[in-house]
Image 1 (cartoon, rainbow, N blue to C red):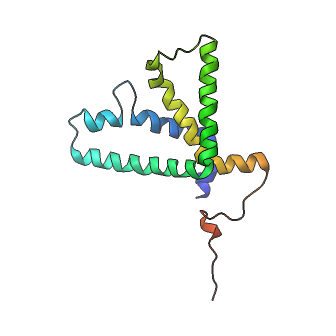
Image 2 (image 1 turned 90 degrees about the vertical axis):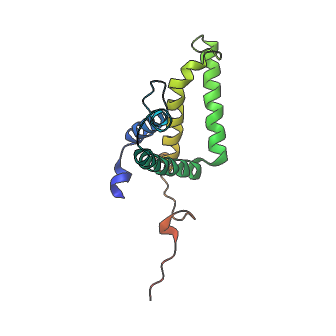
Length: 145
């Protein structure tokens, strides 16, 4: 587990990016296309689907624990405000949703990375380390006989 804690946040972003683009992308080379538009055997579909689902659940669970409703709402507001600024600068058109197929995964990967690494980011920003959390294994009291 210590190895996972030492992985840089940029690497987690790359993992989240690969996860998002691997799930679906406009090139036709994604798990979505593997599952629904190919002649792959069902065993490969089930194995890849199970592994993918496990990783997605891990990222989503940690993102939810880290950000909650307030963090997710704040993230959505920031993304929408950024898109509005880009539109005002002439760099983005709301009607050009084809580009969403490419940058949408980056926005989702950023959210997953911030959520997955939220505890680390909090510790770096505040210098505080939470000593007990209801979701932390180390917070469970250990009884010695």
